[in-house]
Structures are given as structure tokens and as C-alpha cells.
Image (cartoon, rainbow, N blue to C red):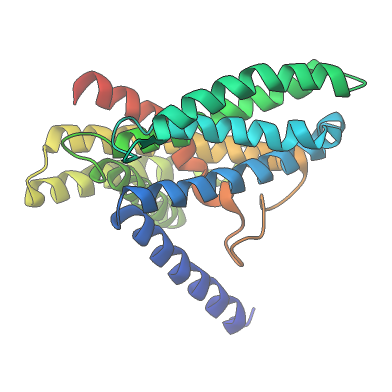
Length: 280
């Protein structure tokens, strides 16, 4: 098959733009970080609702208030987890998240009862799962950004660990991979998965050694992110298989959608957050 230069340049250009936007949001300041992951939050919600609607027809017919109200309720959770650092004078994102969260907690079920003819528990269940899967994860990532000692280094450490794991898992799997990891993602192998995890731990430990970060904690966070991130990728692959689609969206030509790019981070973040709260 001839090399497709158009596809190559499309993927390369998209990847460069994606990298620049991510680095700006991660490194500029806390407000840029919040704005970046607010956009990602709504993008993930849109794709999640589209995917679920493809294999659960009733969910595709939820009311606009349910559809967008649950997104805004999830965004309130992001604001709640900002803590005391996201303030400007008397304005506090944490307080705004608390009060808007209470508002949606009461308003969503009441309006659903009043204006929905056929209330289906399965729809409520999928929306609740979305709050946990998407909104809680991004809220906890923003909370990690507020860590007094390590701040922005924690989200960057998780993202780098996952990126190294994904890259090395692909390379090791391509070279020596023989044993399929899961029917959900036939191209993944046990050899590649284990190789990716080990390379991620080693690379992050070496990086920590030369930058003065605690090697034991950095290596542990890399291990948690790589292992749980792999399951996050499998979970999103399962959703796409149930929906019968190849990509969750098309926001990034050649790379898929928001969920395709952040599936590993979504599942890894809560586990890293627990570790940080307990041991760091």
C-alpha cells in the first residue's frame, strides 16, 4: 500500500496543534488549566451521550434539559473541586460550584418528573455513570492541580506516564507481541501492555531522579497511571464497540474525538488522586 502523505500531514498537523493547546493549558496558569479541562469536559460529555444513544435508543431521546442539565451539573463538580486557589476577589469557583450543584441536585429530578412523559431509570443510570466517569475524574484532576507542593506537576506526571505507556506498549507489542490482551481491543497484547508499563515506570523514575522529585512516589504514580490507563482505554473501546463506531468523535482529524484522546486519563486520575491524598 502506498504511503498516504495527506493522511500523514493531517495527523501530524492535528497532533502539533493538540500538543500546543495542551501545553498552554497545563503550564500557563491555573485558570488556563480550568478552561482547558472545562472544554474537554463538555466535549467528552457530548461524545459519551452520542455513544450511549447508539446502543440505548431511549437515551438518544432524553429531553434537552436532561442532556445539557447533566453536563452543567457535572461542570459544577469541576468548580467545587477547585478549592481555595481559584478565586478572584470575593469570587470563588469552589463556592459557585457548591451552590450550582445544589441547584441542579433539586432542579434536575423535579423538571424531569414534570416534563418527561416516560421516565426511564436506565437513562438516569447512564447519566449518573457519566457524572462519575467524566465529571468526577476531571474534577479530581483539577483538585490535583491545587496540590500545595507539586501543583501542576501531578497532572503533567500522569499525562506523561500514560503517553510513555501508550507509545512503548505499541512499539513493544509491534515487535514481540503475540498474546492478545482482550477481545475488546484485539491489537493490544500482553507483551506490549507489560512492556509499556515497565518503560513508563522506568522513564518517570529516571526523570524524577534528575529533576529532584521523589523517585518512589513518581514511579508509583507512573505505575498506577499506566495500569489503570490501560483499563481506561479498554473501557472506551468497549463503549465504541457497543455503539458500533470506530472513533468517539471527529474533533481531531486523524486522531478521533475527546474520549479517544483522554480515555486513559479519565480512569487513571481517580486512582492517582487517592494515592496522592493517602501518601503524598
